[in-house]
Length: 274
Image 1: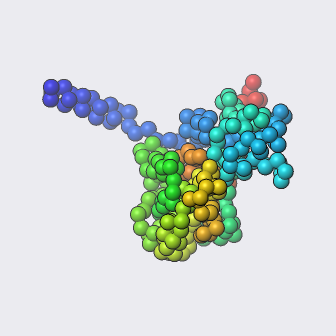
Image 2: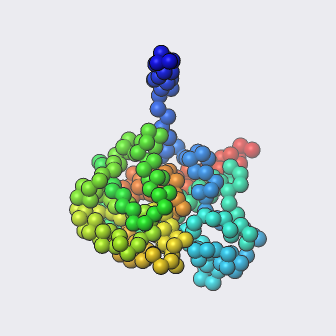
Image 3: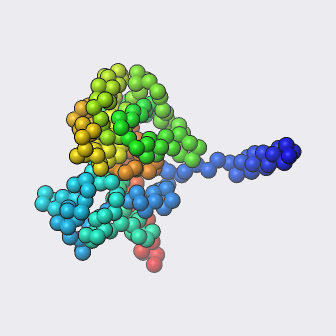
């Protein structure tokens, strides 16, 4: 029996050596449909959209009929209830690519836009970028998507971005989860322990706005009310590729909208060929 296990082990080792480790081509190439699945694409209005009905349906107040109309992706949990009000999601590959382009524009460099531009000019984070993640009350969905970046497929280190467990070694603080009262002082102390310059990145609807927990007793406030937030990456949860894009935008290794423009050029070319 032991001989069978040895043979199987040799088989998988040889297969791994032959095929190598498959790593995503992003950001050199645009993400594939598998890397950004349909359920991670935000809703968008159509000609049949009823904004008032959508506002009534939305459990997190992400759809705003009166002030806009607008969809606040920082509040959206991608529950798809708004489909009943005429909002649409990616149903085919072409439509999904257009929505991926839209999602790329929704990663926002928030309160320190001038500082972020200055970091890019001075190339402060160009060589290496160390990030620390803190969970202030999550369901673990965002945690897992962030940690997936360290596996061989996404291979975060190839881009000069590394995880650290110490705030004193961190350039950026990634915050996930709906902030509860027990974590407020912990979050403040962690932020204050970081050297300057430093970046705070809120990932997922819970950290950005409270998401589904925004009106519950345990939720204190959005992260931006406690510490300065520089970057928000919406989603419930966002995919590793979307998180990676936000990190690359932050350190200036990816220009804002360049990914979206590449996709739009590809779609235009395909239409021209047809």
